[in-house]
Length: 122
Image (tube, rainbow, N blue to C red):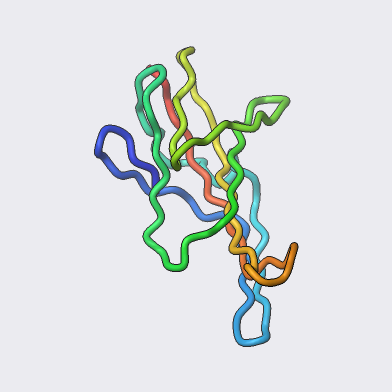
């Protein structure tokens, strides 16, 4: 989920992989724009704080956020699970990728998931 001004909004699950009981399960999906067709845009103000909230244990220990434009993807700086909405009005697509990395074995992922949402800066 994401939170904007104490209001919670669902995100859309995209691709994911999970390693459990010696068996891996992976699902691959379309990109953000295709997954979000027909979904409601989240209305925000320019520069408004957007916070990620995940009600899942254990929490992922790595994450990566991309703003997806027409011809490019830009990494978004996240501090304390939050980032600021763009200052310019418009519609912005985001992909929030998380990983559950093994804490004992370097570079070993126990699971990953991509979550997608889009905002309308008014």
